Each structure stands twice: as structure tokens, then as C-alpha cells.
Length: 259
Image 1 (cartoon, rainbow, N blue to C red):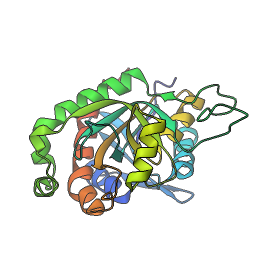
Image 2: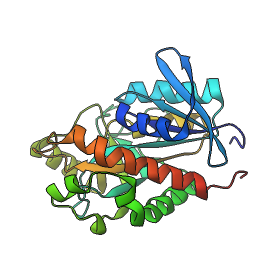
Image 3: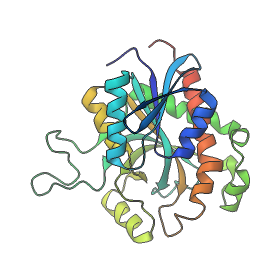
Image 4: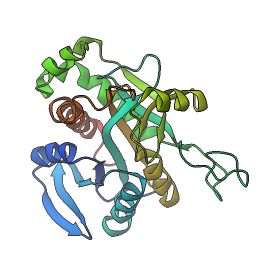
């Protein structure tokens, strides 16, 4: 486990990374098709990058972060669809463990199990996970100042004062879950899942391979149902991106400069 090197902040969408880059005032370095933004931010060397959407894009990005830049930990920040009964739009889910919901090598292996790993679920790192939970909770009182989207939340029937931070299972797959049939199928197969997205479990597996600490925070943008595409881009720009950046800043402020 590395004790030196930058802290990597990874997001799948341009709006999320742009907000981070704006705040951290980083210097760009290009490797392949990725632009990595390096800065010294809140007492830490930090590198932010747009991974792109999907498991392969995220995995190649994080492997590059580890091999080329020697990062000491990886934090994934982005949006997800809510699956849990009490997980509503605007809430935050910090992944305790992650699984690829679309991976199936049966009957050779049990469904979801990754061959040669003897596991299907990849845990987040306890220190990073707990600090990220604390950062998300500490960020809630300043949510209105961190974003310009309270009117959007109100339009979705969400009160900023009612936003909750959840911890638990997050599931990943190369699908945008956007209808009731998909949502109910996932809930039936993985009833403990709180949220669905498209990158986290792949990133967790790469970090597991390299023994690099990993944690992930997701702002719930939709309920992964028939209304999932409504206001999606606007929600990211006005709510999720500024709030996610606010959580990351708080996380960096909480993290000791030397572990």
C-alpha cells in the first residue's frame, strides 16, 4: 500500500471534472486520450481525470493513474441511480462494497463472481470510506452555498434539508438503468443494492489488484426508472457537480497530509 503519491479524483462525466479542475487550478498532462490535471490542493498533491463512461474506460484510466502517476489512493465521484427504498434523488451514497451486476460466468462460476478472484464483491478501503462518509455528512449544511440548483431540487420534490448520506452496496454495469423493468430486475437480483452506476466496481477491482486504497461517493440523480433521463444533464451541472466538488474539498481538508 502506497504512502506517497497524489490522491486521484476520478469522474465519468465532463461536467463533474470541469468543476473540480476549476477549483483546483490544475496543470494538464495528456497520456493517451486522457487529460490528467495535477495540483496541490488543500495540502495534498491531487490529480483529477475524466475517465469516460463505462467499466472499460474507468479501468484503463485508473490503471494509468496507478502505473504512470503512482497515486496513493483513488476516489471516484459522480452520480448514480437510486435503488434502495429510502434512497431518493439528491441523497448521497458512499459505497461500502461494489459488484458488477452484469457479470455472469455461470455455470463455470457463480453469478457475479470474478474468475480467479473467488469473490464478487470488492470492498472500499475503510479509512478512505469513513473519511468520505464524514465529508459527505459535514458538507450537507453548506449544500445550498455549494450549488446553484436548489430550485431544481425543489422541482423534483426534494428539500435540501432532507438529503441523507447512505452507506452500502453499489452495483455497476455497462447499462444506463432507465426504466422500471430494469430497476425491478436489479432490485430482485441484488436486494441490498442502494445505487446503480457504470464504473465503480471496475475501478474497485483494479485498485484491489494493485493494493491501492479506493472509495466512491455518488450523488443520486434519479431513481433508475422511467423518468431517469429527465433533467439529467441539468441536474449534474447545477446540483451533482458542485455538491460532489464540495464533498471532495471537505474530504481533502479532513485527510491528514501524512498517513
